[in-house]
Length: 310
Image (cartoon, rainbow, N blue to C red):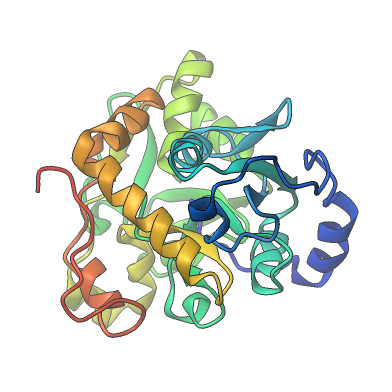
């Protein structure tokens, strides 16, 4: 999600989706008085957008049948503009992707990273935000480049692609944990020098656990030459997120992308990023490779990624 994960749970995804499909759905009856414009978006139930999510605060969580968090707030704003009611369905990360690809849901959100492989099986919106390479470090310590990480104890969560990056850093020792709490615990205890996690997770933990005495830093992305020499370093670069939809949902994708682009321009996206402690300069300005990755793949050759300050 805001984590580019290996799909180790893929075999259980279909079962989980069918088991939890009713969670928060409130039934499949279409709302009354759905406008023709909203109905034309082609959602599975006219006037309703069914959303697969994994609880992953502060990006996505379900409270009282409502999706909250950064992604939840973004989709909530978009859905209101499009006249859609949001119906969440809780699953795991693999189930989120599987639900979209099998068209059991209309969309999945939660920092899903765009990739050339994923776009072959679904549609990505324009990026609601970009995920910078964030590091949790102890107060008073400063690490800026990949070279600064050499020989250090580096932690992350099992299955995150940062595992591959860390294993490529000369002399560094990988510490992989079942969840983010393990990273934070060992960082606070001094057993880990740097923790690689999604940025808002680190920012939230700073507020909730001041005893850890940690700060958030952003890694200077490795150069193209460094990535060419060590391909796994690509995961130390920022990546673009997207809301993910079924291949046939072209009208819905276009409508959501248009609203996302408008949120960059009217300042709403910056407000939401700041609400959750993020820096719009880090989250809402694309790196140079974002456009190149998608042009001629799932975007026109002249596509310009959304950005603040345009």
